[in-house]
Amino acid sequence: ADPRRRSSDGRAALHLATQFGRVASVRFLLDEVGVDPDLRNNQTGGTPLMTAVSEHHPDIVELLLAAGADVEARHAGRWIYHGSTGMTPLAIAVANGRVRLAQRLLAAGADPTAEIPHLLGKQSEAPPPRTAIDFATGRRAERLRDMLALATAQRQFRLSEIEWRRSQRQRGQTVRRSAGNSMSTRTATTVSS
Image 1 (cartoon, rainbow, N blue to C red):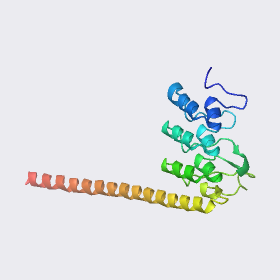
Image 2: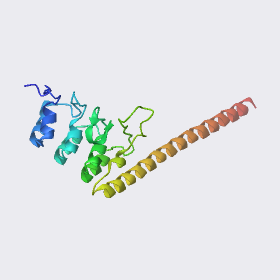
Image 3: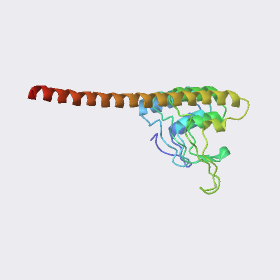
Image 4: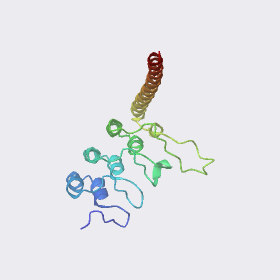
């Protein structure tokens, strides 16, 4: 049987194995068959990582991440109970109160500042996009918000540090070019004397 063949609702074998928490089947499909860890459900646009997060299967999340699953993949359909499109695995983890999975996704490089648009109203009337922190509700909300706020601050610090280093390199190249130009001027003056 073709492991990429779809059911009537758009799911392939990897989606089903992920949904039902079949770790050995997921491992087999990824390692032995070579199924793409980002294989999309052709009805909803969801990925196996999104399903593993939503269904709270941390072992499968680990397998998918090890196989190279995209932590920034966007859900193409409407994530029903949140009225949004473009949900990321991190936003799904936060919306479901999955603290450890959210931590793992952040460690794997998930962007806590990724914007998730609303599906409500016309484009001009829609509220501003949300980020994962806006989906933190329930009894774990404070812990999730604190974790995401820290991750956001760390990301912004890293980005500003990268920008600072880039500007220093550019400044150093300018200084070196200027120094090189004055050296060639001095050399030309010395040679002509």
